[in-house]
Length: 94
Image (cartoon, rainbow, N blue to C red):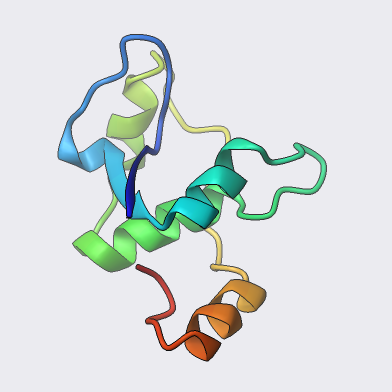
């Protein structure tokens, strides 16, 4: 498992509200995404954070980039990911 900063930037905060654990494979996919065809959408990361912690504060995350809102919203975790995790014996999200 690797720690992923939901909102990343130079000087990013290491507060727990901005962190989620991802497997190494998915962490790499998040960081090497092609913007027109992302493997794991940023909104799915927000959904996973909400499922893990019970809530996600999008306003607080946006404030890390001095914004009023994030440029994306929570969205469903891709079915292909859930199916693959299930086949490998894991939960739908780490």
